Amino acid sequence: MIFDYTVIWDSLPLYLSGLLETLKLLGISLFFGLLVAVPLGLMRVSKQPWINFPAWLYTYVIRGTPMLVQLFLVYYGLAQFEAVRESFMWPLLSSATFCACLAFAINTSAYTAEIIAGSLKATPHGEIEAAKAMGMSRSKMYRRILLPSAMRRALPQYSNEVIMMLQTTSLASIVTLIDITGAARTVNAQYYLPFEAYITAGIFYLALTFILVRLFKLAERRWLGYMAPRKA
Image 1 (cartoon, rainbow, N blue to C red):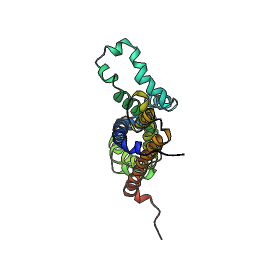
Image 2: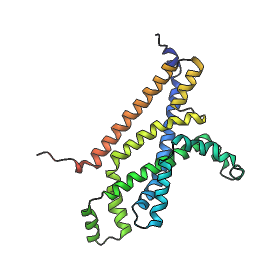
Image 3: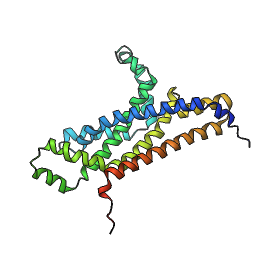
Image 4: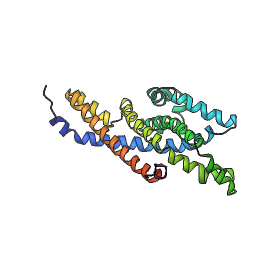
């Protein structure tokens, strides 16, 4: 078997363009997903059913349906409604980039909300008692003590979510976007070299995964160092 990597070398600009598209999709989705996930996570730990239930239902539905189905519903499904096509949102909803980012952000917000909620529930009782002893109100206690502490402890689980979202962005090529996987599909369609095309895409994803893992390890060492067992 002969591998023709000269084609891949000539196609590197396409892959680099796909890399930038992947990073853009990942960054935008994670940013807006986290913005939605924080209030959802707070709602999930509420003891009031009318606050907790909507957040639980949202995360249950999103986590219980495939990402591909959600992407198709946003990109193809909304377009069938005339009210949507005539609304002021149509210029955005007709954009593949916007629809992909919206679907990815919705998906990651549900998983991240559960991660944050789990970290909030695992807050040591001593931190809560200390905040109450300082006379903090409930809102200040969440803002100054509980939420920052929970976000730090959620880093290991959130790092897994970020890696999963990186892999999920490969679905963007199905809705015409040229990300890393889209670049590989284009090269394969032009030159009929599936192995070379997709192994190159895999190398790009592996490199990105390695970088993200290292960055999260550094973040955990900085913000979770106090939880590490002390040497005798």
